[in-house]
Length: 361
Ligand code: PEP
Ligand code: MN
Image (cartoon, protein in one colour):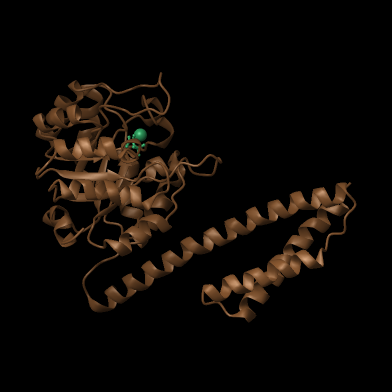
């Protein structure tokens, strides 16, 4: 993509002194519900009202959205509150209806971004539009697929673009509904610094209590905005009830979050330093998580050795691992001395784990 500076013109035009906030329910449920939420959001930092009209569900049988009639509710909410509106479009027919109802921003859902055919269909339906299109990351951790979708819109002469980071699905259950894999948006940001990057903490978290920390990390990484599912009565929401927060909580969150001020030189230095430090924090978390996983495997080996009466220390295997890692280290600009010390420490921890297993009855 060339001339990426233009991609953020739409965002700069809002002249916000804080990151963009998009808020609103996972799904539009009734006209009354949507208007109630919109009126509560009007007095917060939220600029854009979101609501899903057509809901892509992983499994059938869940609430699949109210359909096109919800678009008129969004229009009414816009008239009454002055907020901008956004909804998800998943095919050309959705696009036509959304344009007819003057929806300001269209977002592409994670289950759509995975399919180049559907993305192309939507891009063709939007060719040359001045509407804003925000592309959610695909459900699988694939940066090329994400960028490919953005490029299809760019090539269709859609100039007002942005991306939404909503996390990546994993087979293993983790503390998140969708793993953030921060490294992926960080790589994207390094490649396209002018492409507005928005965090959707709701679909990463899957539950209310981690949303704040996710938002803080994103702001520390210089994200341009947040899209947060907000409902006046979250417990009773027809979809994603556990992850929605009230407009009041959202308002308090925007007060409590640390937002970096841009502009002055020394602040610019602090910004850059903090961004780099947050990138390091992301990697450090990953390292410790991976170490934990490694030790769990060492535990399983310990069980196996114990069952078969084999000694814990296997010198030949250990020397092989060490030799391989020293070479790997060289490829990654790490000194032999460092790799040796690191692997001695890791090896010692594995032995401690296995000794514990041997001493158990
Ligand atoms: C949504 O935003 O309501 C939604 C369905 O998101 P995703 O496509 O990220 O799952
Ligand atoms: Mn949702």
